[in-house]
Length: 314
Image (cartoon, rainbow, N blue to C red; front, side, top):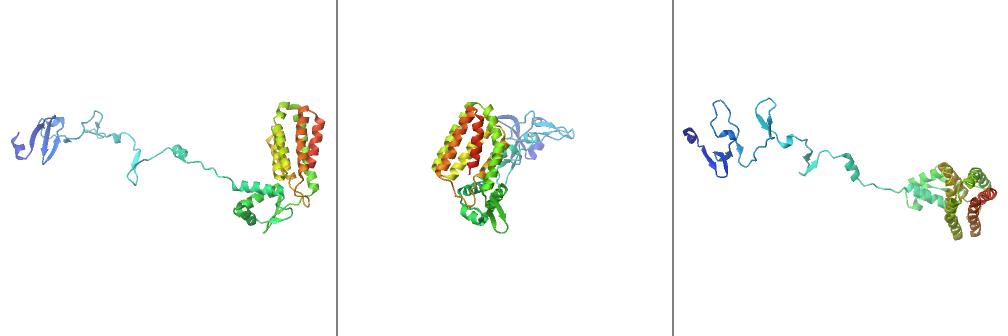
């Protein structure tokens, strides 16, 4: 031990488990760097002491300083981008999450259309005669009847106005259109002009097996007619005709014909609310007869049955 070190209160010694010199200065013990064992020439700075409990430096933990001077530590945090930052609770959260992951975690909410449900209910009420021709109905009153606000009722009524079922009465509501036998005959004529040529073409081109696949739909119309419910039969009747025209592969044709068919099902002003069960059953029986004629490719019978069916439809 040098005399000047003894006077400064510095004690030099070695630990049993560490062959490197241990320096204790003012009660703080530190392990000297490898270059600290020997004397340091005058004018040269001694490397800073490394704490005893610190891990030894790795080969990649030092890199030259930016100014070309001595080496400085290169911590792991400095070699990769900061991906986390503490939040208000002290937890670590990712600074940038992929947007796709957040979107995938968001649940998909399916909401039923109130407007669509009210529209179906109003169409059913029209066919059933619950909305009488010539009567005016307000949106708030119908909304109270269906248990909804006036807004979806008003929107549904506006759609029915586009379809020709009702007309707008300013400051009052909507009036159900009064239809007579002349309008029904006009609808039957238009349907015949559109659907008869299509069915005649299908009779010549569609195999018998495809027509046989529609037999369950024809039987369903007979069951619906037997129930005597005008609404049930109206929907079953339109389902059968949509299936027949669907074989043509023309979606616009099916949509247009279905709209005309629906309008033909509205009750007439001053007429009975619904036809009797016997009339409905007779109308449904024409579906099975039409399938038989289509399978047999009997074009004359097909044309006669379709025109007669349209004339009697209501």
